[in-house]
Structures are given as C-alpha cells and as structure tokens.
Length: 560
Ligand code: ARG
Image (cartoon, rainbow, N blue to C red):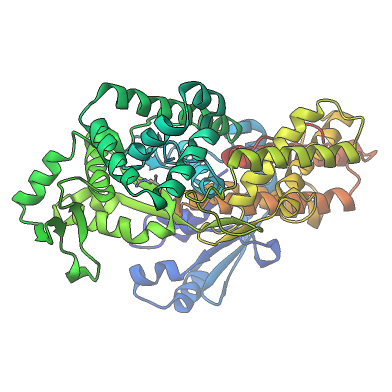
C-alpha cells in the first residue's frame, strides 16, 4: 500500500494533482512528530495562502478512517498519525519482496543525464583532490540509474595544453620509454617537476616546450606517439583506482577530442555578434552579467578551456540529447561554469538551462595543501592503500580468527575513504583523517558495515520463517521500520539536490536505529511470533543498508 498516495487522495486539494501532493509528503525524522507530514509552505504559492492557514483548513476538512488515525495542523505542517500495524506490514513486505530494488523508481525513464566527473588530467598525479569528484559523480550515476534515468558518465580528460610539450622535452632530456613504463605516473610526475625546476634557470626550455606542443597539434608522428604513451599510462593507472572505487565511464572524450569541433562554435559566435576583440584575443563580453569576459581565442589563435567546454556541451546535446548535463567539479571553477553557461545561453541554446555545475568543497589532508608543480602531492592510490592497511590492522586486532581478512579490509578501507568524502554536505571543505574515517564508532562507514555484519550474524543464527506480525510493535521496532520507510524519498531528494550525503546520513540513521533496537531487544526471543517479527526487521535493515551503501559505491561484508 502506498500511504502517500492514499493520503494525497483523501486530502483531495483543488487545483493540485494527487501526485504532486504525494511527492510533498514526508516521513518526519522522528516518529513522535507523527508518521507523515505535509509541509504546507510548499502549497502556499499555488493556493495563495499562508502555510498556517492552509494546514488548519486542511486539518478541519480531513476525515480520519482506520488507516489514517489522526490529522492535525502544527505550525504550517499537517501531521498524520497512521495505523502503525498496517504501515509496518506494508513497509516490511515491500522491502523483502523488492530486495535490491527497494527504493528504486522509474521517474527518470526516457530521460538521459550526462555526468561529467572525475575528469583527470593526463600525466598528472591522481591525488586526493580528485576523490570528491570521483565518488560524488560515481554515486550520482548510480542514484540516477536507480531512479530509471539513462546515465552517460563522461571523463572529460585534461589531455590538451602546453604541459604536454613540457613533458616531451623533459622525457627526451631526463627519461626513456623503459623508465616511463616502469615508473608510470610517478616517473611522469618526477620529470614534470624537474622541468619546472630547470626552466627557472633556463627559460629556453619553455620555448622548446611550446614548439613540441605545436608539433602535437600539427599531428607530428613522434610527438603524438609520446603523447599517446603518456595518456595510456595515466589511464591504466587511474582505471585501477576506478575499480577500487566502483566507478566506470561511458565516454573518455577529453579536451583534445574537441580540437576539430571548435571551429563551428567560433563561427556561430561570430555570426551571432558575440565575439569581441580585446588585446588581440577574442572574448565574449559578460560585463552586463557582472562577470569578466569569457576568453574564447588567445591572441595566437589557440583555444581555451572554456572554448572546449562550449564545444563539448554542444556535442553532448547533439549526441545524447540530454535532459540534464551535470558537471561535478570543485567550486573553484564556479566562475568558469557560470561564464560557459551564460555564453551558451547568449548563443540562444534553450538547453543552456539544463547545464548544472554540481560544485563541491576541497579535501585536504591534515598535513596541509598540495601542489602538482612542486611535487608535494598525496596520491589517491596511497590514501586508499593506507586505509586498507590500517583497516586490516584494526580487524586483525578485533577479530584475529576472521576468514578473508584481506578482502574485508579492502571493503572497509576503501569504504571508509569513500564515505568520508560523501557523508557531509558536498560544498563543505573537508580535512581528511584516517583515524576518523576508520573509527568503528560515530558517523563512519565501518560503523554501518559493522551493522550489516551484525544483521547477518543474527540471520545466520536464527532461521526466519517468512512471516511478519505487526501486533504490539514497541518503539524501537517501530523506529527502525519508519526509518526504512524514508529510504525512497531520501534517494529521490539526493537525486534532486545532487547530494549523495543524504543517503549517507540516512544509512547512519538506520544503523543507529537498528543498533538501539538490537541492544534493547532480544531478537532470538522464545516466542516465535516475536522472534520472526524481529528477524524480519533485521532482514529488512540488512537489505536497505546494503542498497544505500551500494548507491554510494561501497561494498558490504558478511562478517567483520
Ligand atoms: N580536468 C579539469 C580539472 O582537473 C576538470 C574538468 C571538468 N570538466 C569540464 N567539462 N570542464 O580541473
């Protein structure tokens, strides 16, 4: 039974359709506030009245029945109390029958969403600064797919720019094919750092680098071979990490892919009278919108990061006919995306409004800031491996006899890092700490994984007979069930606000509710009715927590 639709139908508000009302209904965070609530401020505009008045009028007109036991107006909210037995029954039945599809929906069917995320730079180290874009983007891909959207994950590779000329010079002077193949990204980074040191004393190196970059663009065979080697090494390396983080891409069309796709864009800008000359460069003036001009062509005729993004947006619209195109990129690029979106709007693209910059905050390590040029970076691979090692140490100490300790440590270590980047509102800057993310208590992934393992051990100990009697639910039991019931709306609002942290918080809430229930109640009660009721709840928790973690790209473990 769908309670939200049931309430919406009963409310029968003139001028607002039932689906809209159902989508406004919420499950309050704690069940003493009622079982469902309608925030009437969402109706204020449509009904041209104040939330308080709307709530009061609706409460007065509401006829209770044996499903909805009461309806009252409190501060602009309409609170409903329902027949909890019936509700609990329907929630448990739904989770147990839907299994790994519990929480999914088809609201996105027929719509495509492009997600530009991770977008690594070729030959540069894949460092902790890339963690957020990779895991937020990866989670959004999974969440949106779960809601029925077709998702195109795009890695907009940073594979264009003078740094490739620098690398070729450095390679020729201080490295070799063998050394690069052996040392991979670390070797590329080493020679890149060396280039910058040497160029400080010998500026002619920079001229040489520009010459090589030009050669790449002109299709010179040797330069392109080297460039492709650097690209291959980088991709091999990052793909290992993508595997650990459970993310994958449908397209690796990076910046250089647009080399031959910018001319028509520039033509169009000219035609539409949007290009202006400024010190020999071509720009789109955005002063009217309180922004600096968007640079399209440098005075030497070469294109810029923004030019490529404009061409890329156009290409994505033509190729995928997206409903939305998301860019999961740090807030440092706020201005860049505002400019690019504005230029596309000025070009008269009606879909410019569907381009969304999903901005997030910085991740730093306790030890402080990093810079690629000075070589002071913390590689994501090292962070993951350190977390796995530390997880192994903790597990080995807590439970030395455990089987498959390595596999479990991998799930716990990577899960801790992913969750650490996903559990806070994405715009917040975070300082990463191993001890904090790996703690088994508090707002961490190991805490949730441990809860799943705990459910599992209960389910292994007692056989569940498939029945669920909702009579006499106590408050801990009911709290767990009503928390489970919040999952679908949590997934939807995470998608709507591009905020995987909602799902992370939900998982923490559910784990907390379950552990309270577990400590205060004997699950293996002698009374079969009570025992099976509690086993059903345990099974539903395990399933829901697993779904939540899976959407975040995190694996669960059966034992810990
Ligand atoms: N490679 C860029 C960087 O590391 C991010 C690219 C984001 N995507 C885009 N379409 N601009 O800063």
